[in-house]
Image (cartoon, rainbow, N blue to C red; front, side):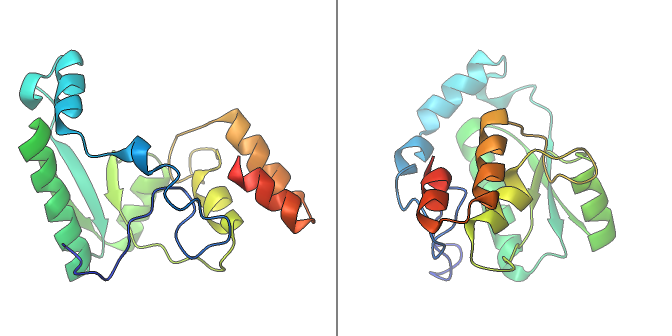
Length: 165
């Protein structure tokens, strides 16, 4: 609705249009469940979001559509779980410095793949990397091992099998 049919939901780390896209395999794990979200925020000690620190949603050189997405996220988080989000637009150098040094909790950025290959997304964005190189601090040794193994695999069928894990 927000982007007026100019984008499609992606339910996995590999987006639609890429080889090995998982289609809707993970859709059920990403369901929209406000009652469960309210329960989790309450269990964390923030009933209806009370006392939860205001979060900044960073945008790099926001386009009108990115601004609309940010405002929609801001509104939905407030409406459904009571979390206040401020939107912060930043120029490229400020945004990237904060991204690479893990000084932002929420950020939106347009990313265009260099080539249509799962490695372009999985290795560059999701594989563990040290602060200053990685785009986030999520880390999973099993995931990293599979992504590294797949990158070295020359047999396309075996490579696909690894990515589907």
